[in-house]
Image 1 (cartoon, rainbow over the protein chains, first blue to last red):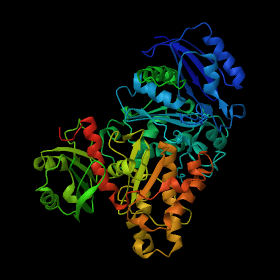
Image 2: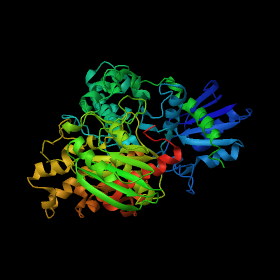
Image 3: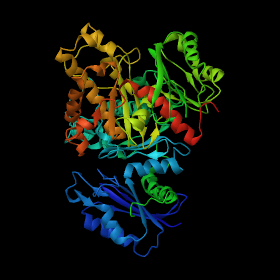
Image 4: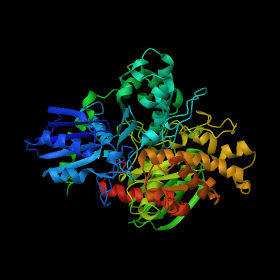
Length: 297
Length: 297
């Protein structure tokens, strides 16, 4: 099977050609600019390829209710050019194959559950911490949409005593994203996260907020594996600190080996590295074609 | 179909006989004491009944991993007599029919999705606020178990400025349950919740914490309906306050009618009233017998 994949992120797009085993034969990356310009790059990449299906993992908020007239539209994004853009419609105009659509983070969660760190599990969470904070959820074998789709980045967290940074979320100020995203780190400490590697206080505070969010996710959907990706997680010192915070917050309440002795195998890096999103788009096609439920019907 | 139902709560047990349409023909309620005494009442009730299946919704933490040797055991409960009690084993010794087991709150969520306020939805949350705080989650049509099962009552919430009550959770002090359960209300205000009906400050603070928890649940699993039951929710003034807090916390981020104009139909009382749990146990049998997956295999 020859599968097309588009990881449609708010900062960059990654397009690829791969197969049903998660192997990527070739890929291309370019910046997300206007919809017209960005999609012209997409079409150029796929022009001479005859793909059997296309998987798309897109930034959001994204309308995923098949009953809605806005199905497949990007809705209230702060990215002006993309507000209320009919992404699925634009793709259907160019691609005649079946198209399978989900959020970028749900795709990454499915990729990790198919061929990565959560292989064999029916419950996992993929969290990306970068320009924003987002999460994809696989629960009892299904990707979660519900009324909209998870927006975990905006979870309310308690402040650590002494943290006086007001937060940078335009909606909630000091929600998780407002306190712990890449831009929040930069705004609080006056430098980009990547330049703060040796400042322990930065990562201890970051781990406090992310550990708190993970604790609430554990208590809500009880995942079997939590995978942390995104630019901020490139700081290798952060993951062990997060694990410790989770254990402190849970205080022994959930008596499971995964939250004790084997927590190093429970809260982990992506098994697919930077490819979780793109391979996840391949997985959307593999899974969707099994149930014959393309978005493009 | 003649179905037996046991709502095995930490405070009281409710046993009933009903059918596959959620109709209850008769029921009995008694206090939860020791396992031996409590189960002797259960057996007396069902003795001369020939039921085709038994649905059990139990308090927890409850081991629901079918691969575990402790499947069907109540594990680390603070109720001393029930710690590490093999509930499923004890029931299997007495009942020859198929037994279907889940948490009491998952059963209630399924009951409401089958015949109550969430009928027709694949995503809903049932929350009980009483002696403890617990939640059952139906996500994309499945009851959530994951690694253990949801333990939403212990979610971490931010304190409202000026609330100096230390919290009463033995594990986390000031988690949601520690700040907003019935015992927390009593400890903070010095009187039982039911005697504080006219004290507005009590219910505004309560709504602040519950509204915050609901906000985090909405951002995590994006339910199509949230149902609030339990003793504390008997205070009719509380539900409208909670809806308002949810809107304040979300700050317009999730652009859905359900969180705006029609929030009165989104965050609601149980459609099955006090019968959500018991009818949910009937629903466990209806659903389980369709997939032929009894706990008692």
